[in-house]
Image 1: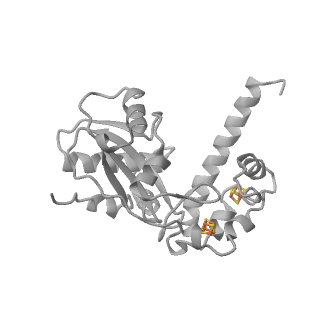
Image 2: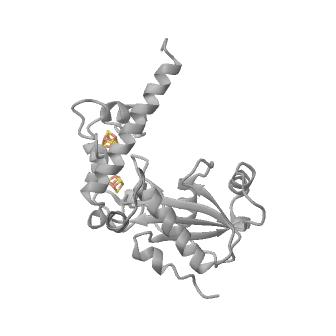
Image 3: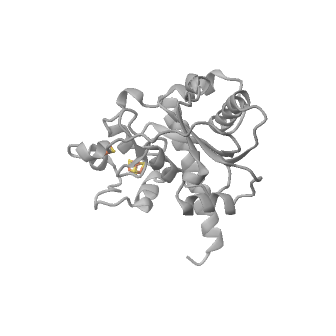
Length: 241
Ligand code: SF4
Ligand code: SF4
């Protein structure tokens, strides 16, 4: 069977694609996706789309997308256009972006995109940590399944772990990732991580494919706002804490 033409997605920077037959997914993962989502019957495949490198952001900036979340809105629009073109008449159910319980990192591991870095972002040879999951959907398509990539974690051959050493919060100092230490530091007025991750910038893998500074600021400023909202809500719920 011939391969699927992902050229239109590649062109806008949605250049990671994987197609899974649902029957081939681990039972617990398939059951969770099908049993806890309000999805129509007849869905046979899971399509996972990601971006690697700076092209997606540049495509978003050059587009007419008008959204508070332009990367998500653009990615969904392009994924839908691609699916309409290649699988006309299909039925789909979008899992991500959305509220469905989809473990993107596990799917990324199955696709061979994802090794765990010390600061918990995924890392892969070539792109380093400069990639992300953008769209996951179930569909009644019959596309050829994607063979998983077989790669080794770049972290296994890393000398001196510059990410660990450079983190100003010491969030990985004891060999685990201390999320609270990271978040506490990010919220400090003098934080160097308000709109970036110093550790991520110090990783030498995929340096040539690093996101543009404007994208890094956009992503990390958004996440800091979400952290502030989440913590404020949690404090309101537990006023005695
Ligand atoms: S700096 Fe080294 S240990 Fe840290 S994420 Fe990069 S490759 Fe992995
Ligand atoms: S965002 Fe800052 S504090 Fe958090 S892991 Fe990255 S470098 Fe460390």
